[in-house]
Length: 568
Image (cartoon, rainbow, N blue to C red; front, side, top):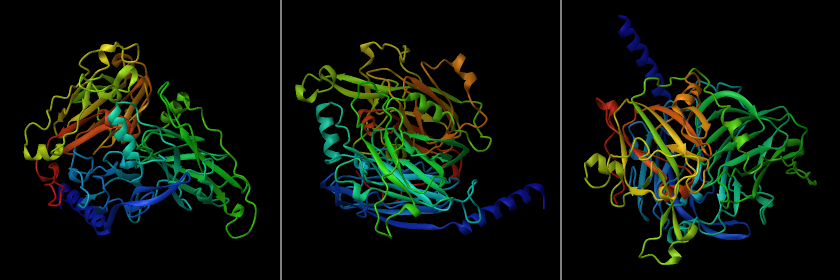
């Protein structure tokens, strides 16, 4: 057998052994209104299968998921599998009017995709209006059979979903903001596994309890499912060892505090090395936008040592110990934390770049249209809030999805002239002229050849206010090769690039008044949205989309649309 044939044979054996252990997992998600009581009031809340948060899906690397979503709610819905690569299965990605039309009330759609080469914690959530406020759940990907974690096996594992709760219908909140042009009302509580915890009214009985025993090491899978708020997370008197993020393993590092932007996940090991008692886990806002209102409350859960538990015996449980959380605007802590991430192995970072892109991101203010009444222009000084990338405020189509329009060659739905650079150079993080506050609306995509090596500089701007923006790219993981403050300077800042072991993520926190540089290879054909994961900013247009062309042959071509793809 020649060397090439021997190599092919080995690859075939590996592929067959992976396939033999891979399973097809089938689930049914019924989207429905369910009575949920929080903060003393009962609401008709949109849930999956009556559960809040929704079901945790547990699969192995290599498994295929088939999830039938049945919409019994009164709103349109889609489900996005956040961070799943969706290789050639863009039809299953889920963002409304990007890869599919919404599932209408009474309709259904089955998402079918294989999770390959990813391990760790991801999550799923609605990607339609503000349904994500309550329609979300964990997606856990374990190693293939016979393989183990690259760290000591934990005694137990607990998903920790950080969320945000409105004491009203969140869809009404966003609709009101859209009507008035003002910022939407901030949330009334944060939650851990859908429970606000002891510090809120009518909440202490249901506070989430996370068990631990002396001497054991447990894995917490922390997910920021909040709609609009980056969050600090801390456990009183306990250190956390970070071992993964966004379903990629990291070089372990120890910290006392986490900061996750909406969309991000962080896997941490926690050791039962403190005196047996009860300790608060707590999360509250990291607020980087100056003078912007935010929910300044604190959510708690309880880390409870078995020997301190009162479940089996009548006793007065000790009051949990409270951690000291960072100040709301503690950017130094955020910077130190985000700069601690490294890939576990030497990374395959693209070095020869085919597409060097520079995207400004930020808010904006539209002048009040002449035909609008004053009550429709309640932003600052009688304006309406907006947002943009490279001065283009993204507008979703209404009659077709972008992927459908691309696949079927439907004209007039989008153009492919999204600018590779800002149309105007300015002092991005300085005093910005008011003439730059009003972006141009458009449905503009940027076309990438299959296999092209892409670098994007994401530059925050101080238009209206600078802010830490969690930018999420669908269909891809990327390497974060550098981050910094001020205006990106290619001459000076290129020397800071980490091309050896940068972290691989699917969501990057672009620093307030700063920049981040990411790289990836465009090896997944389809239409992929890149947007700020603060949902208020998506509504305002802080997004763009890449159109990645097919390559050569079947394995470099997007699969045909499934027969049950919803029609508009």
